[in-house]
Amino acid sequence: MLIKTRGIIFKAIKYSETSLIMDIYTEEKGLQKYIISGVRNKRSKVKTGLLQVATLVDMVAYFRDTNSMNRIKEIKAAQIYQSIPFDLMKGTISLFMVELAQKTIKEEESNPDLFNFLFSQFADLDQLEKIDPNFHLYFMLDLSGYLGFFPGGNWSETTPWLNMKDGNFTQEEPLHQYTFDKNLSKQVGLLMKKETVKLTRLERQKIVQKLIDYYRIHIESFSGLNTHEILKEVLEG
Image (cartoon, rainbow, N blue to C red):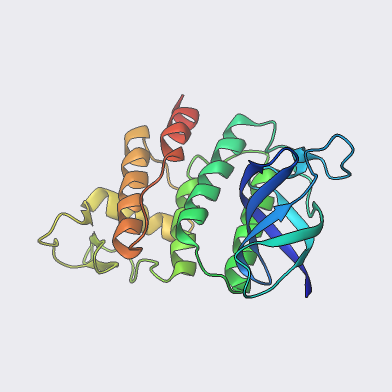
């Protein structure tokens, strides 16, 4: 059957002389693998520039539950990026977001709330005039909520420790290493409330690394990230 859906390109690799194989997170069917033939041919109506990682697309595709890979019939941009392809910081943040999503989302089923969150995050990033240096931290925390492990409770003087194992703020310092210290716990508590947080370069780096560890604890197959090292250089360079 044919399905019509929006999608977010997570991965695109060359296949044969003219085709591409892509991992696309779709609104209708979750994460799916597709092949699109002839797209790397000079006469193709679809330009390969459209089929870049993080691109938001509208597509018509063949779908069978029994197929590990389906074919795309039609594809076009759902939103043409105005700044992400040309802005180093935005481009790097978008790659960071894609890598995190790609390594945490495996379901081959519709999840409208999660899809709409991701779609809007990329669209909003493209339209921002000024980028909050904590944009990726807000994204990591928000995504954890859609994946089911957003930290519970709130930071306060009586609950000053963020326990990563239990995923909540506690009165007593945990007896294991999987915790944020008091200062970082407070900063994360403020980020969770979407408050403007002025972080030092070192604090931001520590929070990113701690949140990566937090994902490792709560997602068994999560292997960590590579793009955060590039992002660190771009944000702090």
